[in-house]
Amino acid sequence: MKIATWNINGVKARLDTVKSWLEQASPDIACLQEIKSVDENFPRGEFEALGYQVETHGQKGFNGVAILSKLPFDEVNRGLPGDDEDVQARFIEGVFSVESGVLRVVSLYLPNGNPVDSPKFPYKLGWMERLHAWTEERLALEEPFILAGDYNVIPQAEDCHDPKVWEGDALFRPETRAAFRRLVNLGLTEAIRSVTDAPETYTFWDYQAGAWQKNNGIRIDHLLLSPEAAVHLRAAEIDKHVRAWEKPSDHVPVVIDYAA
Image (cartoon, rainbow, N blue to C red; front, side):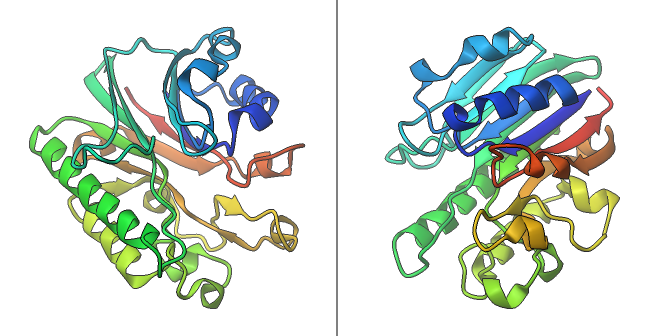
């Protein structure tokens, strides 16, 4: 089965693009971020017509995450635990029955954190701490799960076109990268880097300054797999060509082949 993650940068602006990709790629589960829609306005009927069940955790104007699935949802959980006052829609978890048993899939949209001298950067780091705690609890259950989404983290220098450009940015700050390493070092497998160490492996190109045309990209969209899920990982790839489509998102889909 194919499991994908994609920050679509607004479902209203990108509806036709997303539908075209779904028809072409036909993922079994698609995790979407930055849907920028409240739940009641999300065009679920458009996706249901393509054979998907739809679950969202929306927010007006920005943020928002969704999971589209050809499999029925056994369970859905919304919101990252650990802070009852956090109302930002950045985390949704779906539980599915597959041939090998149960599979948990999370669609997450980790905070950007810029500017770093504002409350946004501590919020980002705090959110990462909460994700770390959630992951520790899930790992203790020894069940397969996948954390898929826009992490707003450039893990290593080779994950961006020009590291000097990103020095000081919240996506590349030492604190951010260290928090990401601590998360992965719990025993998770980072899908793309488990299959390739090739340079210029990017998932995001800014709309400004001809970034796409110059291939000035960064890699910030990741799928992290628990040990029980990682044994089912057969392949991982980035659908880079989607960035060249009409009215594209500035992100592209990342897709894994999962032996369910």
